[in-house]
Length: 420
Image 1 (cartoon, rainbow, N blue to C red):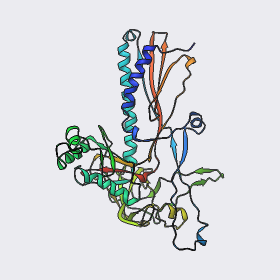
Image 2: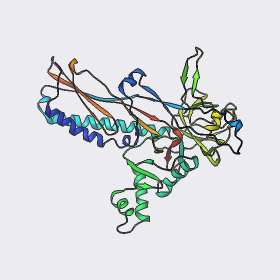
Image 3: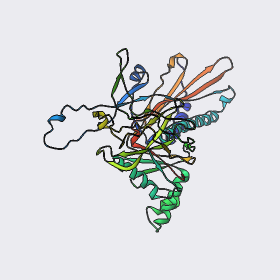
Image 4: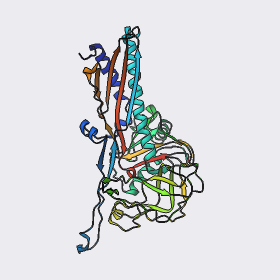
């Protein structure tokens, strides 16, 4: 016979779950994609999602020669790769106090919410490729306007933009708004003064975080590219030596450099003579293209995002997805942007960041008592309980299972302040 939770335990679970849902600040801003349990299991918890097409535009009335152009559909993998759990044991004497159990449940839910938010924050901080470097401390409108300008130059859609700011930076901006717009009854200065509230500013919905990812200063020195023609050609699939066709993740590129000493994941840089281009018009913006280091596989290679798509090979996919004005020279220098250690403030557009809720399905008639609840953004908490006859204690655990993905790194960014 299956174990069951009592009515009091169910009520307590519902109460602490409400607090858990309230704590999912950053993850609630991510778009949700639902992956059903059966598909998740049959695909190894990974599903490939299509990215938007970018069309080529030609001039003139006679387009006879252009009907044979190929459109390449790119896609990205989304994986259920985050699993958080809080296990504990209550003794037979501790179980006499129902309040003790409730307090532990609250602590478990708070811990799970914190871990999910930290995972979302870290993903956003480390993978946003539109890097905005501010040499002074956060001061207000101009800081968010710089993010707005960076997105506009690249052709990122103007609606549904969000920014997460560390508390110290958010409050500095609120201080600026409280002073510069100060009048009694002003719906901007009053909230800024009384609640340190910034809100919707310069085209972004801004949110305050009580923590953030701290990126240390880049330590690489004298690093240059160590090969010519390091441009990337997007492709939808690849074919192995055995003839197997597989999808390709086009968000990354491996480049060859003279050294990787001191380089780490998250470092931001520009390349000499490589500018960004507007993603639709393909016009040179006049501003340097910014890149992020994803990983450091060896002493001479770096995995970066986004790839350098300069149309150097002249293929249709390169022209469709071109993001750089030129192919870097073989000795092009990497100039680091995160020159001073500090907190990273991520910003993004639309559904670039996505959360994919997963589920555990423990069998109740296998001696477990099971409760589940799901938040508005789909995150499920599974609470299980099992008694131990040996010492009359009871084991509890709270679990969440989910995936996080940056589907479009070039529609996500990061801003750092006080950079030398």
